[in-house]
Image 1 (cartoon, rainbow, N blue to C red):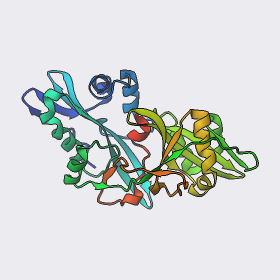
Image 2: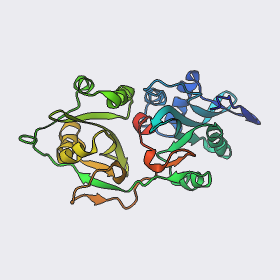
Image 3: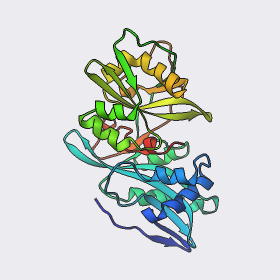
Image 4: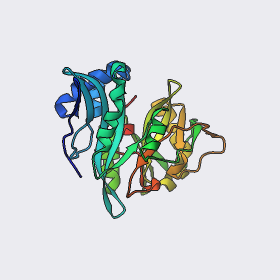
Length: 295
């Protein structure tokens, strides 16, 4: 893997890596230019990953006369995938001030010019999708269903569900406990544990918007798909009664059978990856902007 610091100039515009000392300035820029619902402080918190990692940067930025005019945020992680240890770079917020749009592609090329990574882009906007395809990204199958969350009794089912942090930490072990510790403070990640006897299913979800309405829970990770399947109706009811979320978005690739009364999404949001070593079924949504950025 190359940790070379890239710095290229074009007139007064400079491309350079985002360091820890640059996060506040980048956060101010993204608040002003990309999403003002997130305060500068929340943007800054979102850019800093909640897990421990050795990362070459936090992405790259465009600077003109000392002022941030563009940014491509990135999240790095080292992941065990089967017998492989894979370095993953997740592409996040990509924004360039209108006056400097001609430099935007240079930001993306700076990220992708780093060697030795699998790259993921889990929320590409409409015009980014064809660009990614030209840059050898592949599409993940994001076919999904929308499920209405209805109150569902758990009495007599043996199923218990909790979102209490202490209880979650005490009930998990092994890889699920590592994942929880890495994501417990991630700004966009919400956590529940489903219990039945000695069985445990750890679930991560995020709140999502569709047509600007924050009415959806998107399931990002399911530790035990079989137990989730058995407890699915109770899980959906819990999301309604404990989080006030009326609908759930569930992708087929998570391996959960959707309820009969669910609605297949006509236009599920695209997610993409580029890798010489991993297949689509080996890509997940952990250690990414989906857990870190609560847009």
